[in-house]
Length: 417
Ligand code: GLY
Image 1 (cartoon, protein in one colour):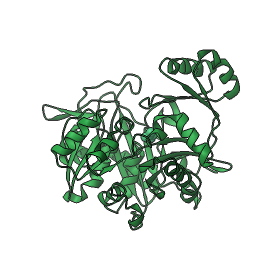
Image 2: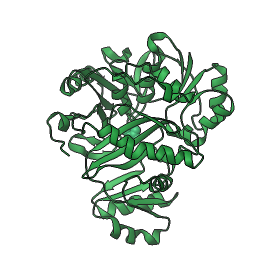
Image 3: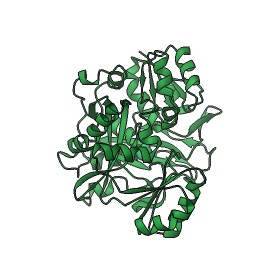
Image 4: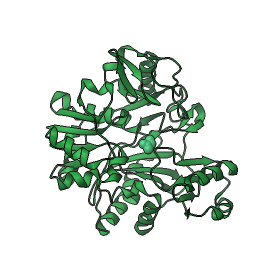
């Protein structure tokens, strides 16, 4: 099958690795990155331009287009591809509003009876002090729209919360939320109308530094599955969150077809929604797909052709997978690019998935904040994490850094519910 993948990060490198089907499928990626060239033809495209994506899909005669990031989804790329008669994995513009507008997601959750944080939208700077009084002292302040991973601030400092809210208000509404207690779960659910099929549950590490210190990032590492999650944890998230939301989207006439990322906190009453995303998460995908045995093209193709209900149960490799992100010095505030990257496993996508890399004079150099992901698998979580660290220790990039405590609390049994 000829497949076009849209996107350029570690998530898309993981998707390509799964979609390659050991060379069975013909892959194109756009805009991609240098590390993907071993698996796919790398082309250019403006991901925010649905017409350009359709033109590229026609040019490569794609039989399936898989959209990785949220920007093209919210811009309507899936609608444009569908109108052009091209099979697409990714929700419509209307359905992608579950990620595109946090206020919309809250409205859908309220209608569907799904547990989530209390929230208040503020549009006028004069209402900020009242909102800060209502929601502190752990302030959760969110940009209502897409903000490229920079929209959320969680802080105990009123001054920091206010400054973020004021900055958000310059371009649109800001949302204040109550802080949800409990460890977080990222559960990726394939959704095809009312049919929901979960992948393995994962956990991300969003802060830049060990012990959850430093600024929020796009994600510094992840592992799957979660040894601390109750045996019925995945089923509860599907039953209490994903299925009611999928039904509500059908009821509204905007059915969801694609990947619904349920970000939940597991509190005293079970799972409550922290956020929805309309796409696979990064870097959780790099760990989750490392364990998927069912061919990924069959899985995503079943959603694209509205046949998810007919798909056989997903098959998973036993054990665990972990991924650790190598970040450029200065990330996330001001990542330094252009540094030479060396290491033996750089062209082995079973071990290294590229994110912010390019090639100069035939050698890899850094081009983004999150540069690459080391991936490890193992019979135990400890073995999987140790393998990921062995891989990352074999890579050199001056000034780069990575967290050294990915999955540590889970391994040491410190996460209890
Ligand atoms: N891992 C967080 C995200 O993909 O949004």
